[in-house]
Length: 386
Image 1: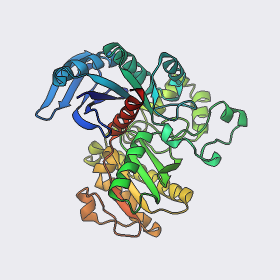
Image 2: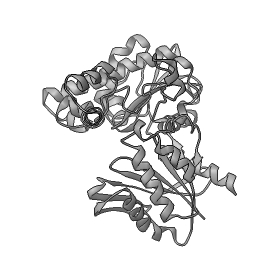
Image 3: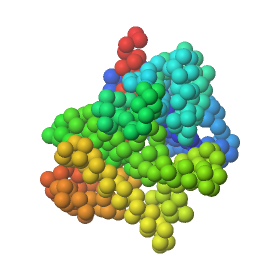
């Protein structure tokens, strides 16, 4: 037996999973190192135990070493034959899982300005993994790849054309999550799998996707992962004039504006309390309630936009942390959409049931699993390299 590793890197965490190697990889160990920095903590689930360990000060490179140190005894002498990494931005060049050679890493470095919260940390993790696992095949799986092939109206901005040719376009994100959701729809709900799906990935990062016959037609995120829906700390859709005003009238630097729109906005900025929906739902503060209502309204608005791009809707799917667990947000989104054929059973909604719709449009809750998509890509790459 051999194994595949998957590493899903964020700015302050690394999710990891170890899979038994197979055409459909089987999860063996999963975990996360969170709060990277001075108070890093490891959580790991094996078949027999759950491990929680405070690691002290650990950066992304150190986290990879810590992960391997804890996982190695469970390998029992078997080898890791492939490693897959989630990479947020693939730009124009990367539309499918790609071996992470030194040349590829150099190209990915150029995309850091497009995903400053993710790309530098992913690259740090990849380089650390190459040191810990020398000679092992390493594959990059790109969140933007699922959205390749959008038509021009869903791919361009109405700015001078040469910028489009230079790569300033609507890429879309959370593609690994949308890919997994589509595979689950094919498996569990084959009657709607080829239909018109609107998928809402609602986590700390949030975006929506219009899918027809398993293909992405439109996405709420665009050039960067800050556009579209409001998120935990990201602002979402914003009039560019606001940024000009902040620069010209408030004399803020690009770095200060970046901090505002990526780290100090969204639910956190509106509520002045937390980026965590669970905290806001338990809060009695007016700002928290307003933040939830704003968030829900923007999702509802995007459902309409996605349905328009599909010329109809057959299923609305909620996924990721908020989408899977917040009955309040789902209710806020769905109740005013009866005119689209979207109605829900509130008891099923409160229970986070897999299917909560009662109308013409199916309303589903499907937990996402980006790591499984990455593991499948590693399996395919390893089979081709043999």
